[in-house]
Amino acid sequence: MEDKLRNIQKNILANEWATLYRVDYDYKFENGDWRTLSRESYDRGNGTGILLYNKSKKTVILTKQFRMPAYVNTPADGMSIEVCAGALDKDEAPEVCIIREAEEEVGYKIESAKKVLECYTSPGAVTEKMFLFIAEYDDSMKINDGGGLEIENEEIEVLELPFDKAMEMMHNFEIIDAKTIMLLQYAEINKLIPA
Ligand SMILES: Nc1nc2c(ncn2[C@@H]2O[C@H](COP(=O)(O)OP(=O)(O)O[C@H]3O[C@H](CO)[C@@H](O)[C@H](O)[C@@H]3O)[C@@H](O)[C@H]2O)c(=O)[nH]1
Ligand SMILES: [Mg+2]
Image (cartoon, rainbow, N blue to C red; front, side):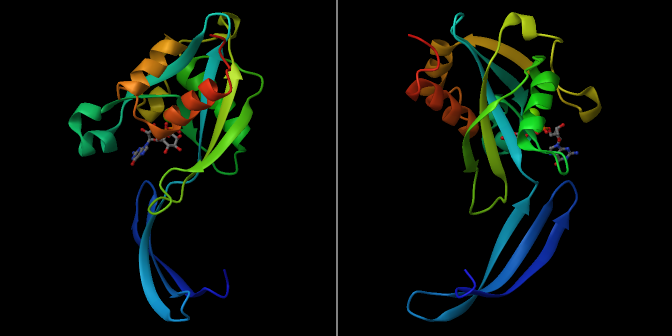
């Protein structure tokens, strides 16, 4: 990209929970013109998500929690149904993060998780890259009620749903979280759960 970008300057506009930058830069268009442009970029680190599934019960584990940005967009969307997910702690590997989140949020102790997708959630505005995993679960792996960390003010309802029901909720627009849709569709395409 060096021949297309010059004079990149990052300016902090807000720096409370996460950091909002304004990045000024010179960009070379295909016709050879250089223009000075500016883009805002919200940096809250990278994240992980996981679809826990059980082949014999034909179920998946999802979560339900209040999400303020979704409420700000559309109040009816405030309670969001999502796969278990979490932000990476500093220097934490994605697989370590998602195993920790599975225990904290939904109460399952999984030994390992398989990464199946990587994605930017909103690359025009947010720096976050997501690492998406799958893992099988069974009742013997349930070691606590989940619910999230009280110290972080999390209140997470754990849902164990038939896979077919989760797919129906996606088609009815009750599940509208992107990482969750991606993982449910991955499960369907790859026939993780037998018909
Ligand atoms: N005070 C404060 N706390 C915040 C803020 N934003 C998030 N938090 C808190 O930070 C914690 C983050 O919890 P995680 O489980 O690590 O992250 P997550 O919010 O579930 O993030 C997951 O979903 C996001 C939305 O799809 C993803 O963006 C993210 O990558 C990850 O997958 C929660 O306790 C949340 O309330 C904020 O602006 N202010
Ligand atoms: Mg979370």
